Length: 317
Image 1: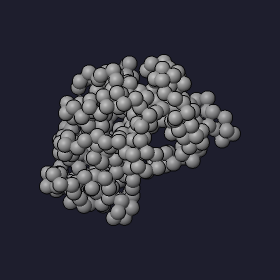
Image 2: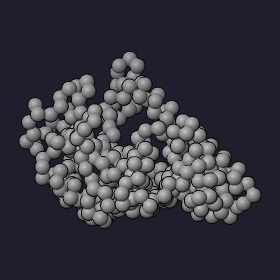
Image 3: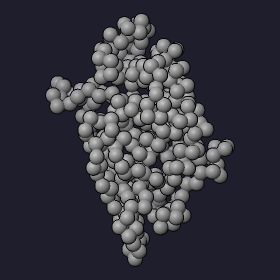
Image 4: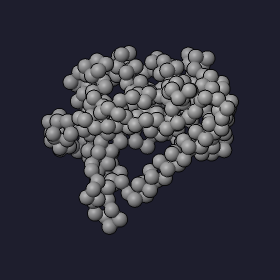
């Protein structure tokens, strides 16, 4: 369950992120004071997403660059020292986007349900009913109710999935059409209508920490997606929580979820809801490691420096 500290930390991170976006915008617009180029806030989605049942969702871009009042490119801005969220989406949004590329096989869809703990929302099953239906021995799962990764979080780790499900999902995710569609949703399009990102702009925290608009790293997302097409999805079997994430090069995929947030008195917050969403994360350090790999080096450029240097090198201004 989310604690007050986790809620506070998340709020602080979002506040810092918005502040950094403003600093990047200010630096860019000072640089372009005598030209027609401007960095501006993106417009909110005007049309509901196809999957959302009539709801408006957040666009992917954090800032747009306009020239002569017309949008010429969109930018996603990151300000983190570690792994940070590239995209989090509703389970039905993920299935909708995958099905658009190639209909997802039933076994692959079931693997996603179990791995992200979405059976209550998709199949109407409780966790216990799901386990019984799949003929999985409950005693074989991680049952620690303080720090456990399965019974407490009501999902299965990769190692607990029936082999037919996990193999079907990996084979499906490796299909080039599926892989390209998923990467475009994660990095460039999101699940909203409109607001595509062409660039990712990171704060190079190793220069002078976070929130520094004079140390930027720009990444062309089309080129980056192309560089990921040759990578293969793998299961992360090490670390603190083995078998809880998949990786595609620098990108990781896991469940982002929580049961209802507790108030300071220990009682569940009546306004909060359970959620289990697919989440995709990445760090700047992982991008740099990927950039230096054989077969990638020389084909993918990181444009680095202050706003003037980075945006000029990238030919955005």
